[in-house]
Image (cartoon, rainbow, N blue to C red; front, side):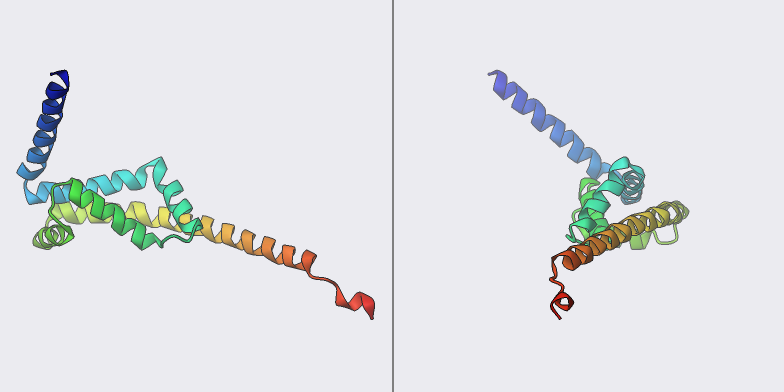
Length: 145
């Protein structure tokens, strides 16, 4: 009986969350996606996630951004990326959206440069180490002449 009560409570919470996401206007949901993206970029997790993803050559920056945006789009109550894009196009000249886009550009560019710089340094260091290892393991053929 207790399990049934807990299950009903969980379902009620899910319904309220889903209903509140759907009841917001498209503009509110578009703004929410932008604000959540800004929040993610400003988080401590952003840089470490980007660096570890790029270090492992799993993906490029754009793919990581797009996956995060897709997650935010769905969690903000949009049915799909196309649904979001349609609503975003309708709000193209909206001052709030323009301001949020400027804010994203301002925040994202320096962080992206920093991540790129860190990755380049790490890759250069790794390449130098590989070259040193090859030099130490390659036999010296001039010694026998």
